[in-house]
Length: 110
Image (cartoon, rainbow, N blue to C red; front, side, top):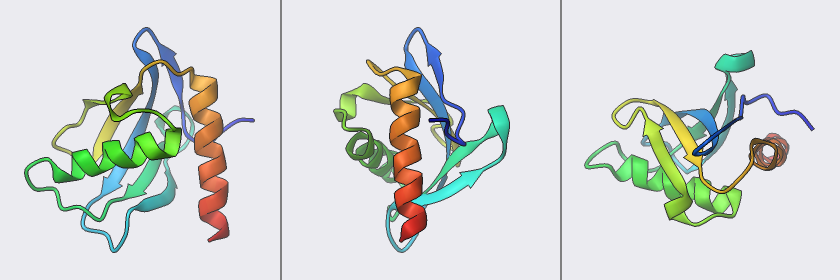
């Protein structure tokens, strides 16, 4: 199963890009932006980008989505921007990509 989001294995864990939209009406997957290696998972966040609340909400959402603990999710780049590099420790790129693909299919059906 291949996903539209580029997920790579690194020595730290599986890594992928997300593009967040804070202050959305609800927190949910909003699709994919970009193509190929530049593809990023779009996530709408209910939380505002104030005092790290959006980053905290993103980590909580991704840990629930991927079935990990919050401590296994790290925002490795883009702390203060909309585009962020996510590292999932202890998971392979294949596992993360499969979970993201299932979530994208489920989001499209809603």
